[in-house]
Image (cartoon, rainbow, N blue to C red; front, top):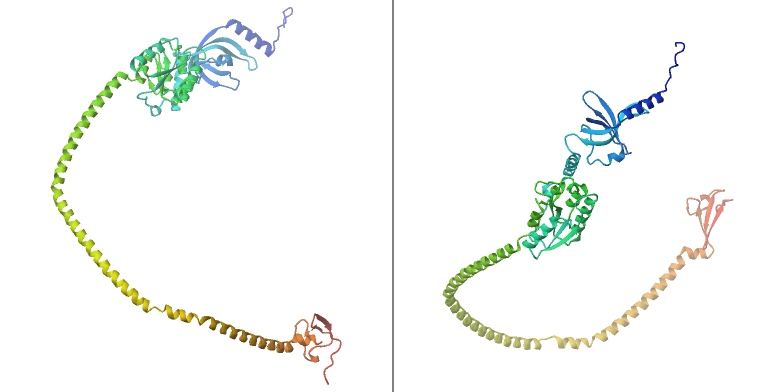
Length: 449
């Protein structure tokens, strides 16, 4: 360091970063940048972080949540955009970046891009499939209108409906058709009319306008309400050149509100004339048919007349045969009746009833004699049984035991001991008494001398 020179200030990293940030923010407070979106991150905070790049360079960019929520389209990688913001430095990493205040796709408006993205997503769900679209009722009882009361569209539709079908009832559900909150009110009106059961078909629409004026008919809530409606929906938004997502979801797209009214309401006078024409044609057809049937009946009657005389002759012959058969049957029945009386009298004479009655008188006597013999035999049998029982009782071993004798058996074999030499001293024996049993030990064996 040279003598007398001012000492050089040494900066910290933070101080240098703050100086650079201040110079960038002062030098580039409002810049427009064009580039391609890359490395897009969408954290839970709602902020959008990405890189803007061209073939040579890149710069980091951030779109904070309050600005990101205003985007009408979904930001995605590879999209060419034009942005406006201010340059600054993200101090923790020492990187310079642009904080965005505005972002739009290059070459196409934000609304148009949002419309295409939403259309693609709903189409993948099948909301625009032709297979789910229903035909309009031929003659509805009541038509529902979801539109504004102040526009020209409702007047045009009412004039057309009144001219074509004066007897048709109209149920109007007034809603705003542009501006903040219009989409949710239109969707609520569609759901209310569809679930009420009071209308057979519904017209949803408004007059022409810019894409911003018609934008509420591109909102997802309206498209889903139309697709979920319980009754057919006719979309009548703007002029023929105006196309909204509501047109794709509706069961029928009308180019104008007046055309929508013509689509749902047939001309009553034409229907009356057609009905009268059909009635006249039916009457003529019935007349022709009756004449043809009358000719066929006359032809059939002539054939029947030719066959009637032979049938009458056969009927007369049948009556004669019927009379002869009746007479023959009556004579046969009288002959059989006389024969039956003769046989009945002979059977009465040969009947065994008298002999049976005479024999029945002896039955009580035979019964009494049988009873006496049975009692005598039973008394004799009883006396013989008593004698046998006495003899058996005298010979019974139990009677012998009752007189003081016992039966001695070896233990544990149970062999009856008849002689003293069958057991030895010290053997156990069992003595059966008239009542009970004794267990004994042999102390001495004394055989007979």
